[in-house]
Image (cartoon, rainbow, N blue to C red; front, side, top):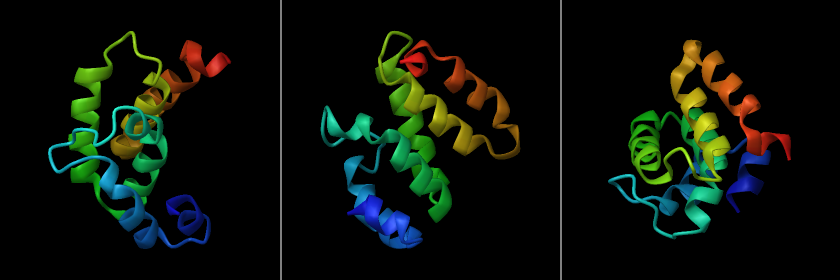
Amino acid sequence: MSWVRFAEHDVQGAWHEIRWIFDEDGAPRHQHISYRELGHYAATAARAGATAELAKVVEVAEQRLGDGASLRLHLARARALLAGEDAERWHLAAVNEPAAQQ
């Protein structure tokens, strides 16, 4: 439902729908779904002004996913959304990620 609300430009509604996938400490609530939705979670959190919550999730994700994880592309996107004006290096990291070539 969060994707629908986001598409309808209801950012706060989308954030309300998606924020449950990570807990208050930034840990995923579901071992598969949470990190698969990290890119959407990051975009929604950034637009909803929830950068403090997003920062916790990114910190935990960096520790859990490491360099060998298949979800680094989503993590690079989340970092870029947190970086604001300094986002270019993270966007480049996402584009140059081998998983992005697929």
